[in-house]
Length: 201
View 1 (cartoon, rainbow, N blue to C red):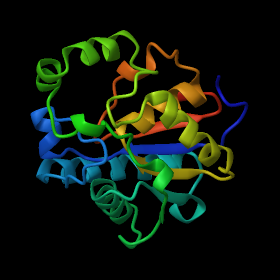
View 2: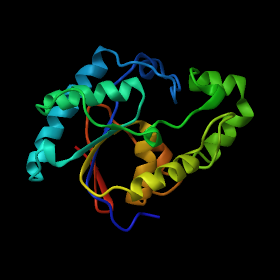
View 3: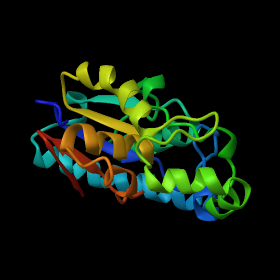
View 4: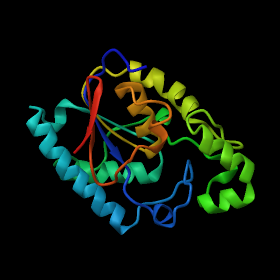
């Protein structure tokens, strides 16, 4: 399934939120960064500065693209400041928004298991294709991202979410469907997609 070619993408997951700390399913809920999340965004920005330099790029050479949720927009603003750029800048793209957990958003996984034990077991059995009630599956997320990925023509900094990162790992890097939904996704680091490979920095 990996795409045949793709420009280099420097992917930043948004920094930490209080819901991340509490283990709550955020999905499309607009939860802000906490102080640690802002520190992580700055750290990712400093790493990004080094990565761009090592690739022979300056910040003006790359596009900046972002999910419209506030936690990603603030992460982008902080990272841009670390690059010596104005905080404002970059294109918001609804296709980069996190997938939705539907009625499960705001719950912890133990709460989901208690309220919907059958559906929780079904998701554990096939995380890639399972659709939460009123939500979206990883497979549907990948379908949403496919046109966006096909449009990429230049190196880009992409600030988005854990689910989007996992879908791109499948779409670009060929990670298996059963592996992609459980791949580790870090905050405060940069995920570099180059060719048909990906690597955390």
